[in-house]
Image (cartoon, rainbow, N blue to C red; front, side, top):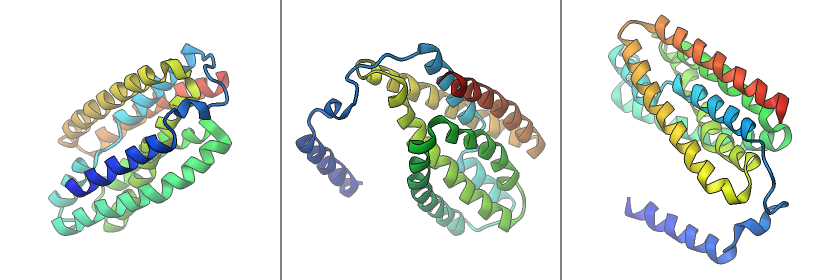
Length: 211
């Protein structure tokens, strides 16, 4: 872990040397924003993440049903991260063009993911891995980047902290709920995913109407 840490710190120091005051890149130094839109986005983010099956749960299913060996399961996670990288570049470009409309893909993909991930088919499992990377690309790139479009510079640090809190709580509760529902069967995970993504879609549609 020392090697990536050193590289991380070098990049951070270099970025500071090149641009010590990032706010000068902003078109507006302190634009006003609608707090109601921000709250809608927070609710959307929470419900979008809470039924997102985490890879430890998916890998548990793959192992318990002997779909893949332990070595292949670890390799598949690497494949997931590769797709995450590729899709991050694509969804970032689409977000620049269509803004919050592109986020409509998140609830749909998150609902479909359990259909692939919790079957006993190797083919569907691989499709689930690709879809997992696709959703992660949204979570790690444009869903976080969107905060900058919803807040002023003076409030951005606070709002990012709040967003990460909500995101983390949703991720924690989602892992607990999905792990618990897995004991009762795949059908219950689908119902949970459907309900949460309906709420997620509702808040996102309202946000798009107001933004």
